[in-house]
Image (tube, rainbow, N blue to C red; front, side):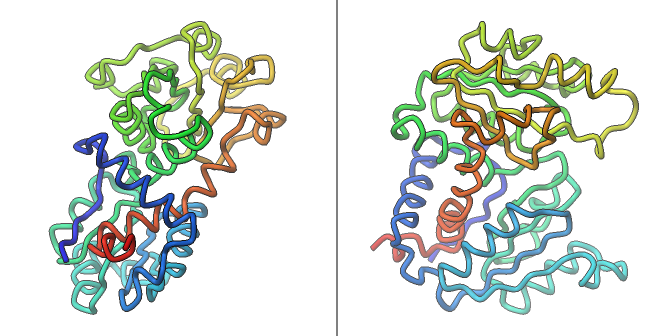
Amino acid sequence: METRSFLTLEDTSREDLREVLDLARAYAGGHVREALAGKTVCLAFFEASTRTAVSFELAAKRSGADVISLSEKGSAIAKGESLIDTVVTLDRLGADAIVLRHPSAGAAALASHHTAAPVINAGDGCGQHPTQALLDLYALSDALGGFEELAGRRLTIVGDVLHSRVARSVIPGFVRAGIEVSLVAPRTLLPPDAGAWGLPVLSSVDDAIEWGADVLYMLRLQRERMTGARIPSVAEYARFYGVARRHLHSGLLVMHPGPVNRGVEISGDVVLDASSLIPDQVAAGICVRSAVLALSTGVAQRAAA
């Protein structure tokens, strides 16, 4: 069966998105049926992760795969082995899929050139995080009543776009699904090529609500990736780019890929409010990543039968 790496959503069609989400819904309904039985999935996580790592491991195990977990601390990378050599080793040892998280942008694409196994990008530096975008679409479509209900909705991505691989994946994903997208961020936290996206850039969360946003998608302020003074202060940032209870109105939904800096991107009393889809985003990770593993390894038809 044909295998395919899963590196980005930039060339993904609306029907491709629907295919993954439909399969994920089937898996959520209990139709996994040992889809990956006899397969070996290697989780190569060379950057810290909780939600992504745990949900990929649960997705693989619940689908019947054998799972090998690899981290920098417990691998030969700590001794100076290159990423390419590590990937070649996993390939020769018979990995059927490699789920890679790495601090360098482009690492997953590089790895895919050195193995016959499909490589699934679980986050590469400031590059891409495609499965996050898929689980976001899954959670949002569930909340709105189905995939078709996404078309025409207005969603604003708020915060540290410059350092966000999530933003680089959710923007093409949301746009392909028919969602109108705008951005809210300080100019210092917008990438130089942000204009190429052709999206409205607004000045604050208040402006996003005036624009008619149905959904506020908050990004984590990634202070560990910053160099120089990108913002005057965290308090000043939260004032213009944080969501507080005063912003909530009937029907407004709030999303965040996690982990949340409470009181910065979102006030503490909003994180678990009824308007928040954050718990639903986390829960969607298992079935969505089960679907991605099945499609990548070429067993999706067998799994859906």
